[in-house]
Length: 269
Image 1 (tube, rainbow, N blue to C red):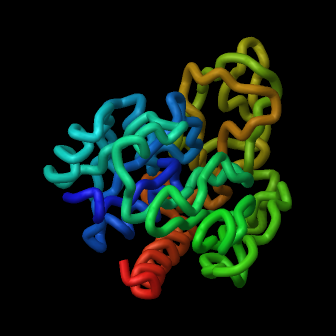
Image 2: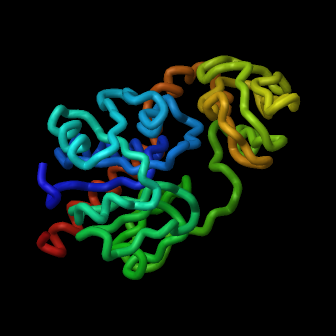
Image 3: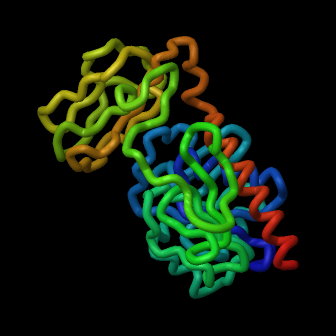
């Protein structure tokens, strides 16, 4: 691996992991940059879990936590995906990567600029292609999901989750209070509407619909009132989906890979 080949991916959540897999399958060395305390909901399919666990496997990839660039290169050479807690991009003091993908999905730009890498790509709203980054990938479910945007931005965040089996906002569970999260049920469990699936302090967290818990924040996480803490899929037959990368993440990942190749050819990097 050389710095000229390296792709930095900001964020290691479930959507980011779909992009990481596509890039890794295509032969690009990838270094994932995460926060000190990732808050992924679909964490069983998020390489960000390596920050907590030291090592985390998603499908055919293994993420491993590293703290230095030298350790990242060793991980890449061994066929693993290095994951570093570096939300402020301190690594850019040591390298200029071939490409940088902002996959935080914060709905706003947390500091990514075009000058950070030869190619810059961002997922979702909060970025303008041609100004903040070279390309933006549409992340809203629907006809334009995965569309590459080379001028302008993605559709604005509606605040309403996309429909799965006819359910939108009902399937997403938000924290009813601030405090320490403690699960009562686990990812993959079948639950009924109104059933307590977790507690925040003494406050119970009920399921909004019946189905399978598709994602849930880690035990011990300090929540703030209103933050997303779980996701329920009403399709009881879809338990296996809790442990594999989603259709949405794969679609967006394919677009990220397309953008890297297209921009490389256009820029002759």
